[in-house]
Length: 105
Length: 122
Image: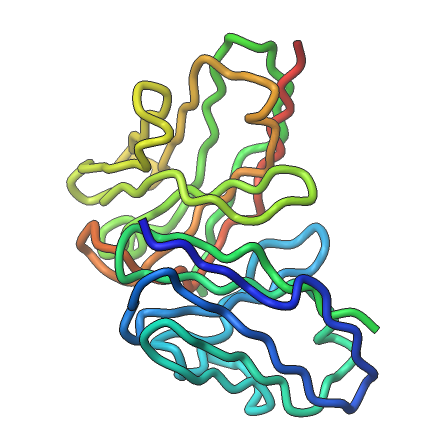
């Protein structure tokens, strides 16, 4: 089982600032890494797959990078609608999610 | 547009079973896999298992051995997840989620149902 660890647990930022979220795998997952955004009371929304490919309709301010065991989601200029919880998920073996990073004002 | 529409909230007694449904379209039913992911209150996401609706083949996380059953109804393009021997820690929102693959392989999820809250009381 590949365990995913996200940091920080909470990230406090201001609108317009850059946010950098980290995700670490307990063993290599190659580039089989996805990122999701979840707002309260909603289902997760796919942002990034293949570590760096934006899903359909996702703004360019969301950028995924990394490979192997270290991954990063960067939101270049936070908009008000970006305040949410973000999860990483590896799919190199049976899906396992990280614990999430809450991005708050 | 891809839509996954789930059944409504449930309240169950510990020790009983719950069956949650996820209605899709013919296209999704025939060409995708559907996973079940749950989220306990204030917690993260936990993958439970996956089914290939077109053939009915399923696999699940070892944690749910003997408790989870995934089935389909081809006539209505609906997928079901039944969880038995419920305990309080099964209280969660249960999501169905689509992967754009026809094989039961690890994948990411591009569309999700709206979620079904299952509350287990003792």
